Image (tube, rainbow, N blue to C red):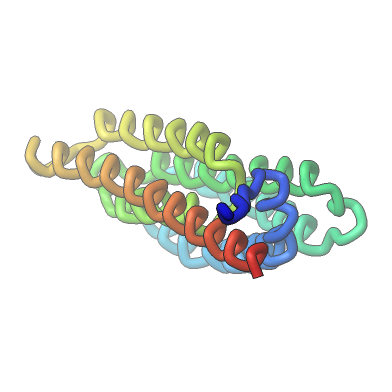
Length: 195
């Protein structure tokens, strides 16, 4: 007698992990709100054009307000499709603000590439959205971030090539880790269904 196959559909997988994924997203949103404050202090110190800084400040206040709104919604975001849509919009806003901050920074400031690389690794891991949608979002972020390489002043070409390579490796690593986590969670769910 052959053992039954316990294939898990994408819908079953999302339904099973919906509660834990929502809790994880809410934690990420709350943490991201605090992430803005140290960055604002850095931006205040480095951005010479005060109008650009105040524009960034106003946009970040709007983003924090949107994050707070998402975390407080219980009844309005019961539908998982609407919740995923709001999280995708939030992630787009978050990454756009990071790119805008990078653009406003002085031409010789390169420290934002560490944050960009970290975001390329961590976003696919901590935001439990459809991997295809996240991939499109992060590839757009990566392309825009790499385009900024040509606007910045690097000490030499080796530094520039290293930055390009590091960003590509960070993006690949983030999706590889996220894929492994999803496979692991799927294997756990299959094991639970067998019992």
